Image (cartoon, rainbow, N blue to C red; front, side, top):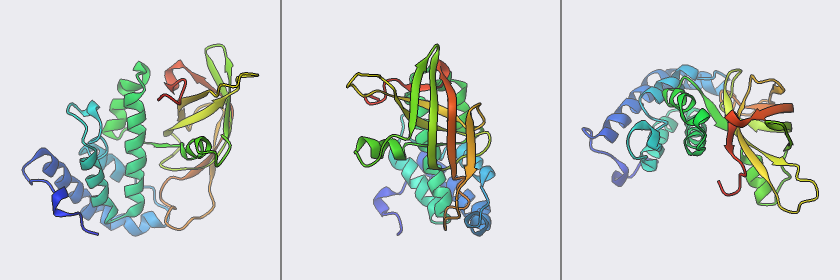
Length: 236
């Protein structure tokens, strides 16, 4: 459906300029590749173009002005009119940026975040299972045990989107607390090319072929302080 008039922006405003730039990408290169994306093309260059015009950082304070969630949603809507898969990956990128900004970890809020805002880093979110776990629908699929300097994490996540060999996502693991009744989870930035991380192709899924969706298998993957988004996770 068309966006209501109340959600539109004055063309000469910063928001209007951003949306015009997004529309140019959507109606130009994205429109030309939409069918190929549905058949399996991962549109990395288009996602970077959208990041460059500010489409996936409009909601963040880190871009030098107060975040505007409405503007971020309107940018996703402009893209989703042309390609729903790319609109979904914009959401993945936007959410991952939110994790980085609010982590309070200098190792993530500095150049890592800035590269993410520029689209030089692309990432997603692996929180489907943790959210279901918090709602008591599923068990937590990633398990962590404390070691010197961090955690060792193992487990498998069956579906994580907007990934690639050098990309990343926000993830949560349940920490082994022994006999304690108090639950404890750690949230961290999971890099797909890190030791102990294996990416696996997912079965064909109509409409998801170009979304960079993979299964991730972790085997004693070390999570150090520079990766921590929140510890403990529930207050975050």
